[in-house]
Image 1 (cartoon, rainbow over the protein chains, first blue to last red):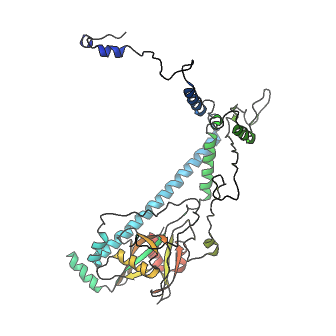
Image 2: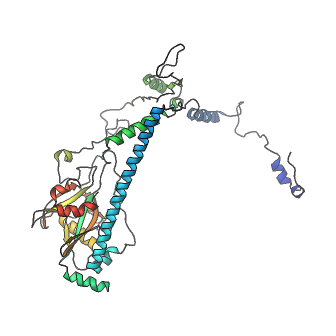
Image 3: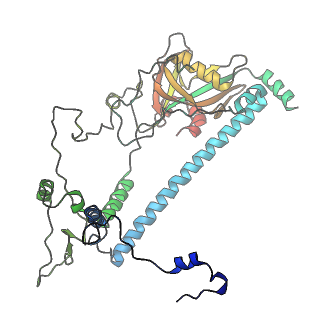
Length: 153
Length: 259
């Protein structure tokens, strides 16, 4: 039993909360089983999607297969890290090229350098750019695009 | 001080030009190499092996026609018999699936009218990754080599050598605006061009002259060479094809910023 200290003894609301769960009759329950047809249907659907009797056996590799699996995994990680390294190097080279061009431009023509390095207030990223997909669209390239008055440069 | 030295150099300089590296970004993903194909195959098979059994009762109500059609296509593995030796492991069949291997599910093909091209049930036919322009090796087409970025190269009228387009700069115009306007005057206005930045990506130093290259992308439209321009021909080339056409000096300079 829960003992109440003298300090909160005279708090009837708190005592009522501490009494524990009270069995209440659900307003929706109509059938004898305690749940109605709609609830039973949802329960059946949840059961159909549950993991019960659907889990595969735990995969047990033999020592040889485990070595093979680890080799494949390590090779893939190495391959990806090589790709990442190449990409970072390419970006570094591109940045160096840009820096060299800017330093040279500053020496050659300060006016052009100022125009080239002032950042525009708003940068518009084009919505027309599409992400590469596995297969091309029905029309691979929109070559009949016309400059209208709306998209004037 | 810097401004003074700058002015003194710019007087000595013969000309400053804005070059344009106009590229068409890849439309399709790059070709997978053999290692990638086999790795993806391995992981997908592993994933299928570790997948839960297909919740058939959720998708096909027991006793319905749909369930019968589905059931006709499935091949159910036989359960383990007593006193039988299984060299590759005893089958452990639960809910019509051998828990030691992946489940092979075959779905009934939906009926569709072959005449109706807009039917939602028609089988998906992906477009070929190799286009007509690839087969004809049409170097002027933007529909070629869809998995690689293509770059615009033009043939000079004076020296008849292949270069990246360069344009002279007017008074009070910036490098990127000169490059953009130059592209529109040589290639016609019907191109949707996005210049990535107004900062030059590369400088080509030719004794006293300077060419600053600006990177931009073509998003739609096509490059149609105008007769009044300084160039007589153009091509869209991938970075592996460029060194066959341009001079080695230019290639060694530009190669660093091409993908």
